[in-house]
Amino acid sequence: MNFKEAPIIVGLDIGTTKIAAIAGRKNEYDKLEILGFGRANSIGVQHGQVLNIDQTIKGIQAALANCAASNPDLEISEVYVGVAGHHIKSLQTRGDIVRQNPDTEIEQWEVDQLVENQRKTFIPAGDQIIDVIPQDFHVDNNHNITVPVGVNGVKLGANFHIITGDRNAIRNINRAVERSGLRTKDLVLQPLASASAVMSDIDLEAGVAILDIGGGTSDLAVFSEGILKHTAVIPFGGENITNDIRTGLGVLKIQAEQMKIQFGSALPAETKSNAVITIPGLKGMPAKEISVQTLAHIISARMTEILEFVTYHLKQIDLDARMLSGGIILTGGGSQLMHLKQLTEYVTGLSARIGFPNEHLAANHIEELAKPMYSTCIGLILKGYSDYEHKYKEFESKFTKVEVPDNLKKDEKFTATPPPQNEAQVKVPKRRIWDMFKDGLIDVFKEEPDKMI
Image (tube, rainbow, N blue to C red; front, top):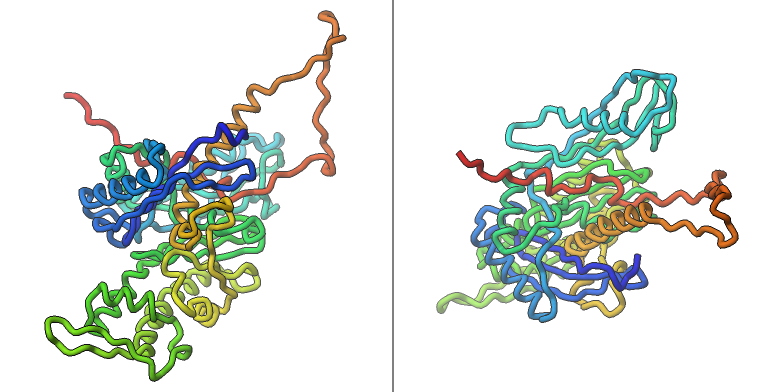
């Protein structure tokens, strides 16, 4: 890929507490150069769902205006948009087909048919299947086959991970974007976007759980043996912690948020028992003194609940510390809470670390964007580049030039040298995160135009 011809790709993260727009382009070192950045407060979104389209449009437009102010030469017309919310669910299924001609090798159309059959899986009314992800295939009694094409057998089957979402909730996101004067290039699941920003190829191979702690929800994506094993949206996030502090200590929401950021800790034992925070009184009322340890107890209770959900989901899919040697990667705005890493290791029994998206950023990036709260937005840009590079390779393969020797006469036959076939000569490309998923999620949720009567 010629980096000079690389497009500018914009990620739009519509969250519960913030709306962020980041424009980036890859350089010759395969790193993202940030060309524009803007953020705004999010008012019309709750628990990851757009509930007030007009308020959401104002937030999107404010984020875009701030992005344009950071780079007046930037023109934004299309964006990659993150999809989240507690309506996103997943389930595991298993499917099989009996082949018509077992003496022949399995072809790609048979695999496609097997996957398509899973789209008939029963799901609740109002929901729609977002993606059907094959985890491992089996042919007759041979299991754990990664690529079944070319194998002989009577019965072809697979285990699947199916992701579903509320049709109208996802369409509301798209409506808000389009009414803001933008075109949605594609919709991307936020847990997968965050995972791509903070997870390396080594993590994918070792097995890892990504926990993105956002404002309204916490998104979980679990990878093992190089494949996506599980996704879940936990209906609690940073906003819940702030509300717990507000009600538990009888303070204003803005005061609760400031205390959480400045003095909050996920481990009460790590705080000083005699340390206090002084909150100014309202309208002549006396100042209020709040124990830092009491604040930590409130935060710890809610964070422990979120982490217990993670443990529950890992048990549901029979994954333990031995299968997740990469541990847990914490990202999102809520991951910056003091002592959260230690609490995570205590509750889950897995090693933990904070995931920063700076590995993908060029050296001259804005320091603010290396924070975990922008992992989703950076991941959206990476998804855009994955799409672009995939199409670029397809284009190259269709128009590959064949050099014909000058001394070759017109009546002579020219035989191209066949590509190397032994394992030592053939390089097997590494499986990357975006290779697992369906392209064009936006096509699934496009609304049909009104028909003329």
